[in-house]
Length: 115
Length: 411
Image 1 (spheres, one colour):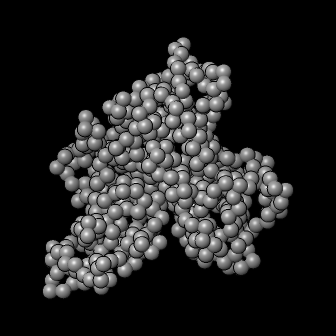
Image 2 (tube, chains in turn green, brown):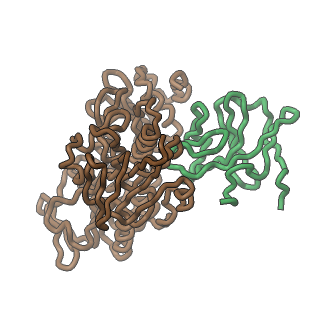
Image 3 (cartoon, chains in turn cyan, purple):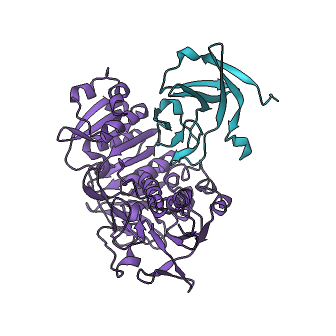
């Protein structure tokens, strides 16, 4: 059992570029950072429609586009904004401390365990 | 907006679902009813020919949302009910239950149905068409015991069902009158790659060939082709296109031409009546022409657009870049753009490796783009289509060109 408020160090913040996505793993879950307008977001990296690695897709404005079937997700809320996906992406909390990005071990929104 | 209004959605496919949800989401306060002749609430049909047939996905996982979600959105689902008549002046729809139901706004999202094979024997047991969960279940039942399967028609459904049947270990013959699979949608260069992919996987292709009769006593046993050849089959799946379900509207006076005519706000010729999805023949103000699009993405996007208009937000015309995908074996195909007619094609990648990105040019401008197993380039290619970009073909074909960087200015 891990604590709800536990955070994991992911990568240095100065490595991140706007409009890009960065995959990483926590507890063998595939997550990613997505950077938009200087804001760092952490979300599940796997499309909720069908298995696809979302970081292979692209961000346009505030939408993450799945590379395989063009499902769209809002980068901040995780909401599915374009079919075929209808299930939102789990969203994780992000903290930057001492130039390092930390991500919550558990989703803070759209936790699949709550469905 | 008035709570006493009633939006009636005819058709429980994606376009109907999207209309209802978007109308509610954008502030429609009245009653919303979805009427569907299928027994189930709205579901995603696209896995039927793929994951469902292959036994990797269950029908119960296809629904767009739960019954509770519809209840929370105050969307009433009337499933298993057929509309048998419509009076657009009185704003009333008659049902096969003998009841009638009035409306203030009507969404026509009755979709399309598979075209039947125009040959004797097309109604024999063992001859299948694919549109619904029930169709998929019946194909799966038949494939269980089948060894030899004929797929008549090599468009989307035919190509995907051929791949699924092959993945299930069946011997598959894929026949079409065109010269290669998906030729209508993708043109001869890309469809040649589609043909090669089927052959890589052991499908026998019979192109430029027509089924003239299906023979059998209790069920289909044999197909006869236009060259006189007769081949034994245990099951047949036909995918030769669809036709819009417009029969309810023939005598209503509403504008019809290859589907229900709508403008860029999904409005028909009758005030308060809208259409979206496979049945809608719509005006695209960006390219100044009409088309009817029989793809999933359009049903969702156009339904959503119509729902906004119905909720009173009539500010943004519906003018998207049409999009479709197809998954066959481990191949992902995506296309963004307008229906292809006359074009020049510029290819990058490696056809031998079955990995290609193609740009369809009209008068030098990028009018469509396809990726075959190159999903990383798809979004960039799509941006170039949206911008109708004019880019030096040498730059497009050069393997050192980073399409994402090249397309950045169109973001």
